[in-house]
Amino acid sequence: MTAPTDRLFLPDAYLSTVEGKVVGIDGEGGILLDRTNFYATSGGQPGDTGFLERADGSQISITGTVYGDAAKTIVRHLPDEDAPVPVIGETLVLHIDWDRRYRLMRMHTACHLLSVVCPYPITGAAVGENESRVDLDMSEVPDKKSVTLELMQLVEGNHPIFTRTITEDELAANPGLVKSKNVRPPAGAGTIRLVCIGDEASVDSQPCGGTHVSETAEVGAIHIGKIEKKGRENRRFRIRFGALDRG
Image (tube, rainbow, N blue to C red; front, side):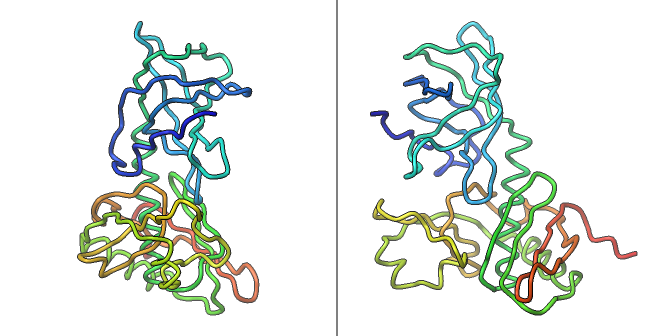
């Protein structure tokens, strides 16, 4: 049985390069490493792309990263179909596509901020490099300019962002921490990772396994590009980079 992957992106989302050892190649060609800085697709955030550098300087292009088990403990690195196959025990240097990852970190953080400005149950979400969507269980249609203004106030407040761990029992005693209406944090590990915003989590605190920036100012200029009606009580917010066009 393959040992769990040491997921270095959880304690340090800024780790763009690291060494890892090949511990297996699965039946579909996925590369398994003892540790990785490559984020695996989860929670609406797409997995990392990049390349694995061999000792001779050649590269193994990675087109995606996913989990290989239901418990989300084993990370599979998906190579380009023409990429060479490493050998078990080989040490590689892992390079994520940092520009892409950083945009996703900023966007994922923006999604958290939207859940603060519009505190309604989340029914779906997808983090993108240039646009993200968050579906909220709400009946009214807010003004996108007003929501944008409140978002930018949080961004410009430059609140710190950090993680902490609580027990599953603590989460059960504080069900309001879970903002998703349909998805619960994975159980069984005994602990839950919280992403917190603001001093002493004064702005927000919610379970999340994604990657985020360390201060809200890093998000940069964002705006609500569109709010769509997706049912009587479901609204889809589209978050985009850049300032809102006030024309």
